[in-house]
Image 1 (cartoon, one colour):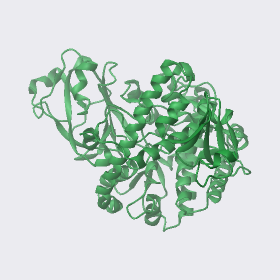
Image 2 (tube, one colour):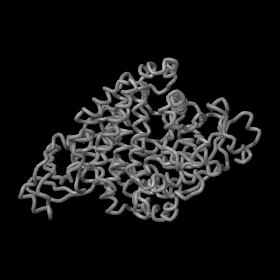
Image 3 (cartoon, helix red, strand yellow):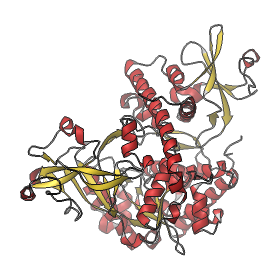
Image 4 (cartoon, rainbow, N blue to C red):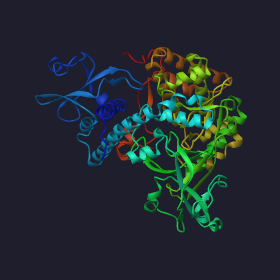
Length: 592
């Protein structure tokens, strides 16, 4: 029997959707709507109605929508107080709520293609609400293990547990990120990190002429015999790992001629925060990224692997390592995992993989993805509080100074000196924590960065020819704006603002002080780079002078509208300049 989402979970997802629509100004909600006091004749329809700050939307079609607002919120001037509103049509006034009706209003007057996308997004919202409830139950069942994760002896198990802690927390900005579209309840419980499953991989024997390997296969790969295949195939075929959920659909998506599906599975794995990246249980230094026929951060964002990413990711690995070797300010602040090995069958996005090898020197360290910082622990404290007690003697503000300095020093330097902006989101930005050692970053999965070859060549003339090897043309850019936009929406907003908001919401420090600290650390870093002779005028103009900052428009490009309608060339890098600049000293962070 199928399970329905609870009303509380549906309300929580609806509120996230409404806030995102306000942040992205979907259908001109903010730019064409009016913030007004609620008319007296409507106040009686809403018990304890606030006297001021209602958004009146009258331009979507017949009728008026009145949404109660509160000032501020991360990256937006106004946020919704609730997932309910007043709808006035002709002489009728009624209270409405929920994402079904909200999306119905926003879809008024749109073309058939957009209405189809809106209907798909309603399904995604339903999925998010259902998965939210299932994952909350999983959290409760795992609470005992999660509470003790920092005491785990093995660094690999600590990392896996911390990834799991992060998996229970929603994405800061994409409202339906909880949805793993394509996963039913059984798949969620069997293959999602929230449920701590273990499973063995399937394997496909592919003719050597059909499979490209970037280096020799890892030594712990199973043998043909272990998989129930003829050992003689070693002369003609190579083994390619396949996720069990992708396995039944291989024929549907296409197989190279001569491929053989192994009758047995092998190599026990556990899923990490990314779902499709798996830890080898007996070889925790090795993580395997596999194509997965599931969508996250939007139903159209299918988690396959484009073969070019194998080569572009390794390009950034070797380049970042080269920069660290010649620039002490970078070399003392980050390491990079080894991503040289991968394989793919032609251009098939469902027949590819990347193997990541973690540095041996991390055996005594605790690795923490930024996504875990704001996660609540079973005792009610944020995970960042437990980290500060363990590694910073309980001094939250000292930890914050170190954290801000680390991310700003690395990413501002990469942008302004070398022309590189990394899409190191909360999942891929990993902190290296070790008692008595300065905090560092562990880099990985940098196949979707942006690079300005002209600036890179000026900084590293001997490496000037390297960017030509990048395979994804979208990586190379011709000016600084794409670098600034990625720095702002990834490093600044996801990795700095989101944790600060969680710290403020938990009452651990005043919001105004947190933002003042961020502003000061940013200015200190820029001034240090200027003392080194670097021109930082573009950063000052973009970050400290501009009245607005870019916001990644997740619904506008990735979910509700087609590329033709939105104008997005890349749905994961489509921006709108609708965020009031919280770095301006006169800009209040939130009024209530």
